[in-house]
Length: 441
Image (cartoon, rainbow, N blue to C red):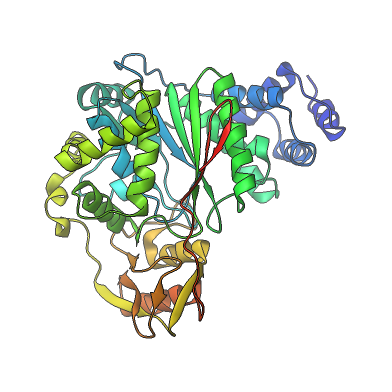
C-alpha cells in the first residue's frame, strides 16, 4: 500500500477503499506514516469530502485502532450521551443519575475541558476525593451495582483519532463533516455503549454555528452509528448562550445538585429531561419520549436522582457531603458582582468569550498541562431577551483574587450585548434526528 497513491486518489475526489482507509488509520495510530503525509490526506478529505460508506469505514477503523470496551457484563442496555461541547453544559451530572434511577445503566467515558468548553471530569474532580480513573473491571462492576459511572477515557481508546485530531487543529481541517463525525463517533463506539444519544450544539458557542449545519452533522453521525450497528439518535440544542447559569467546575456541580434537589428549574433541566427521556427509550425502559420524561420527573421529585448521584460519588471515592451542604464544594476567595453598564435588553451573548473568560480565571485550560482551579467561575443572572437595569448584576464573579475578578468583570461586560429595544429569547431545542428523519421542534 502506497500513501502517496492514497493521497493522490483523494486529491482527485475518488473514494478510498476499505484497505486504503485501514492502512492510513493504522499508520496514524502506530506512527509509521509521517505527519506531513497524514496532513496532506486530511486536507484532501477536507476539500473533496467522503461518501457515506467511506465515512463509516473511517469511523470503524478509528474505533478499532486501539482498545474497545466490552460492556456485555452489564445487565440491560447500557446507554451513553455525548455533547459536541459548550459552556455551562452540565447535563451529564443531572441526567446520568436520573436515568440510572429509572433503571437504565449509564456507562459513560467523558473528557476534560480544553479551550472555551468545560469538561465533565474536571467538574466531578471538584468534589473532594472523587476519582475518574477506574480500572475497566471496577468501572463495569460499579455500573452493574449502582447503575452509573462516569470515568476518563482509557489511554488507548481510538489512538488514531488522537493523532489525526492534533493534526486537524494545526492544518485548518477541523471543519470537515467526515472528520468531525468519525472523530466523535469512533470514541463513542470504542467506549462500548450499545445506545447513544447525541447532543449536537448549535449557535455562537458551538462547533457548528447554524441550525442547518448542526442538523447535517447530527444526521451524519447518526447514520454512521446506525450503520455500525448502534442505536443512535440526536437532539440539536442551542448554544447561543450558556446552557446553565453556572460556569466553572465546582459551581456547575452546585447547579446540578440544585437541579436534582428540586430547588432550580430552567434550560439545563429542560435539556437534561429531553436527552434523558430518549436514553430511557433507547434503553428499553420507556415506550416513548413522554413516558420517559414522566419517569425522569418522578425520579427528580422523589429524590431518587440525587440519591443516585450520592451513590456514584461514594462509589468513586468522593465525599458526598456536598449533596446536602454545598459549602463542602471548593469556595472562591473573592465573590463580587459584574454590573450592567447600561439599561436595556440582552440581545446576544458571546458564548465563546464567556467560556474564555472562565478559562482565564483558572476554570479551564489553554493547554492540556494547565492546572484547574475548581472554585473559580461565575454565575449568570440573566438570559438573552431579559431586561436589565444599569448597575444591576449581570453575573456574580467567583475569583481567586481581586485582579482576576476585575478582569472577569470587564470580560463579561464585553460579552453580554445590551440594546434599547426588546429582544427575543433563544430557542432551546431545534430538532430531533434519527436514522430515518429530521423532526423540527
